[in-house]
Length: 397
Ligand SMILES: *Cc1c(COP(=O)(O)O)cnc(C)c1O
Image (cartoon, rainbow, N blue to C red):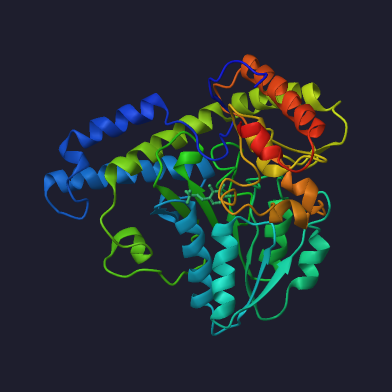
């Protein structure tokens, strides 16, 4: 192969971020002390200390969103938070109505919940985005009915970085007394979210997208009449009975600290990402038939999604090695199917096939971006010069 250094260049921070050193230290310290194993539901001194540590973390999470601490319910991550919000709201309100609304461009952790609810007899309206990836609020307005109980529309899209106008969406739902849930796994800790200004009822978060540990997340549940959820599991009083079971104290401590650190670093991180994304885009945009998926103005700067016409997806992933990037969403890349998110935005199947998602981290620097530019340019030019068949084989060889 024409290219040299095989050192991986990690540009896949939208999939997961490294645990902050201070977070790891706090978690280890917890595991090595009685805090880490005392059951927070026990009434002895050690149990009370664990409970206090959990409540402190709850305060840190609440501060990130300007919420009240009791509005934070700890879960195992955004997948579980989405499940709890969607099944919990749909089932709790089923007697009032069985109509629900979401978008076709949501994460699988949302779409698969709604598909399961359809099999349970709920009716779901699936809204398509505009070509920009954004939801037209007029489309939402006209989808709402008297029996609509829940709307779920994400904040930042995990594949394209597109930022939905969740303030307008939330206002539309609130005016009709419909619960509004948003999957904020890609935005929480990265963009400012103030639930005092944003009339959202349910918001999903996960620690590992902002330098916290994997396997811990939260659902914000607004303290308002009517915003109640049927639990998914039963067995105890923890997390206001919405998520019973012994809490993982070390995970929760790490999550709380990660939230506090993220809030302090948000502004600087976004400026950094903007510069990196601009450098990368300027370095590749002159390649013929290159398409940027998602307009600059409404996207989170930590993500750049590009398609190259005439290049096959699997060959592309092999061709850009050792860049660690995603083809479409990390979760769908096993299936070999092109991105349903990009196709919903009007991208052709061929164009969606060749899509690559670059995503940046706090420690990403210009030299990594320059390597990415060099490698991406090489891959596109090289793959286009080969015959369409047997491309993947040629790259592997
Ligand atoms: C990562 C992600 C999830 C899943 O989060 P987990 O904590 O891994 O369960 C859900 N939604 C979006 C938008 C994500 O980016």
